[in-house]
Amino acid sequence: MNIELGILNDGRVAMVTDTLLPDVVRRVEYYREQRLFQLVYDDGELEDHLMECELPEYMSAPVEKCPNVIILTIVDGLEPLGYKAPLIKVGELY
View 1: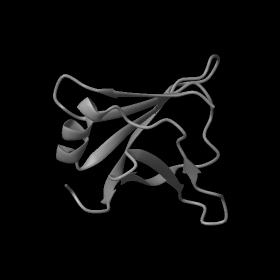
View 2 (view 1 turned 60 degrees about the horizontal axis):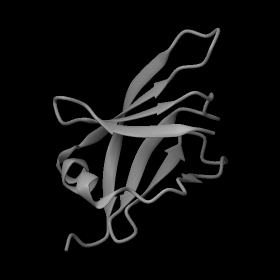
View 3 (view 1 turned 90 degrees about the horizontal axis):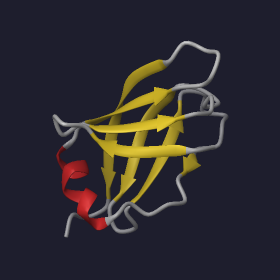
View 4 (view 1 turned 180 degrees about the vertical axis):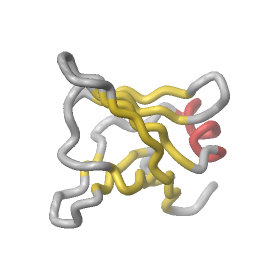
């Protein structure tokens, strides 16, 4: 699964994937100390997806300001899918 993270011109956080996710993302958890994201799916039986790549430090401030994440799924041959998911910050802010 390939997921790219970006900050839009208006400051919102966007995640773009070129692979269908196993279900709708219920929320995105941001673990402050590790600077890692975890996708939590609507189907509670599915395993949550912890992203393996640590967020660069310079992107931490925009993420802290954002209340949600825009999820975009763009797969060849299918209509693009986009929606917002709440962004939950976990851990202490230094």
